[in-house]
Amino acid sequence: MQIREILWASDGSNESRGALRWGELLAKRLGSKVVAFTVLETPNLSNLAVAEDLKRELTAIETKTRQRETKRIERIKELLLRKGFNAETEIATGIPHEEILKVAQSRPVDLVVMGRRGLNAWARMLLGSTTAKVLREVHVPVLTVRQSAGKPTVKDILVPTDFARSDAAALDWAMGLAGEFGAAVTLLHIFEAHKSWDSVKGGSMGRLRDAATKKLQSIIAAIPNEKRKGIVITENVKVFPRPWSGIVDFARKRKVDIIVMSTHGRKGVPRFFLGSAAESVIKNAPCPVIAVKR
Image 1: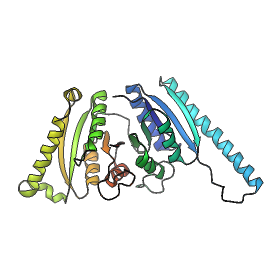
Image 2: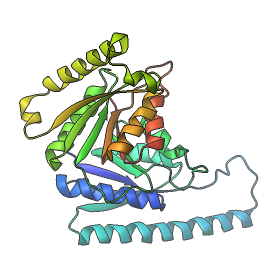
Image 3: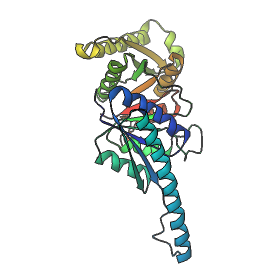
Image 4: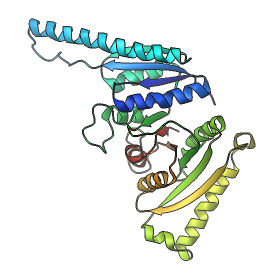
């Protein structure tokens, strides 16, 4: 598995710092460069008649902010270098998600790492607007980390699937991680139905569960032997009222270390390629999530 550069998008929040710990874990194992990146937001005054003294005041504030952020990000770079990482920094001015997209496109970035909510979220269950926009538009996988995430470890990887072709990219990523960390992989399919149906052993529901299990087994069997070597892969089929809640419930009960899933949207407009199920999982998952595009 090759990850040349990990772009750590930092806004100074606790979740952002937690995301860096996961970035360090991956960079250490894979020999990746860590790019510490932050964006300075400035008010758009182009359509306002602003007095010169106010312009000077705002310019002074922006200068102080840049100096403070430069010191913060350079201090983190020094810490990374002391730990033996290949690290560098970049600072941009503008709209955060747009600048993150620009730097991800202009550099050989293979993974973006960031906090789930950041500093701009106003509700516990809300996905930060910057994170959501990056997830929808960036061309590389994104690892999102919530504030309460524990010590980074990769021993148990969950890969949800609804049998879409785009799920193959997520499974490939998960197998790569499993090979690097010696982790187990669980391939999970959620039937959208009331949980009481899960107790039905025969009849139509039982046959559907059997069909889904066989489909998961065929997906596992199709993985090349060189990728499967030494990796324990299991399949699981669950019934839940909503697929995303079933994924979150399974991850919580199983105490999964990380979820790797596709971001495709299957209903209506794909919302810039971020499916509603993927967004709901990212909002509510008890562990970090790597969102992978097809």
